[in-house]
Image 1 (cartoon, helix red, strand yellow):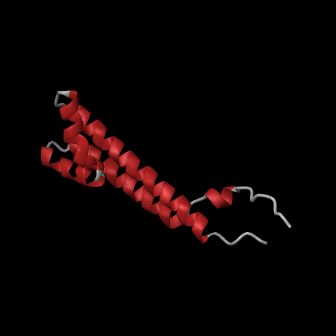
Image 2 (tube, helix red, strand yellow):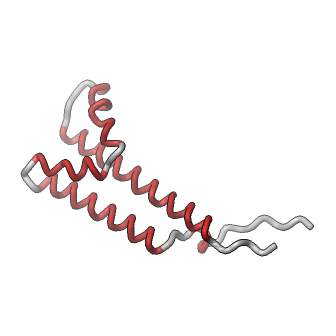
Length: 107
């Protein structure tokens, strides 16, 4: 007998607590790296932000080369976008893991 499609409930979408914690720690560390770069006074402190934005930070010099000018603000914005992409990917991974480990639907 055909079954009705399974409706998505908020419990199906919610990501596990450990993944939420991991995302929160990642974002807190990334914001700290941005603040350290902006207010630390040492340009070498930007390495932390570059590491948190990997692999997207590898493309920053190529993008600024295509635009034709170098700007610290543009580099910072591109690295922040990379951090955002990584956080979104972690969130999507958490949702995927939640669906994979959720209890089976009754048959």
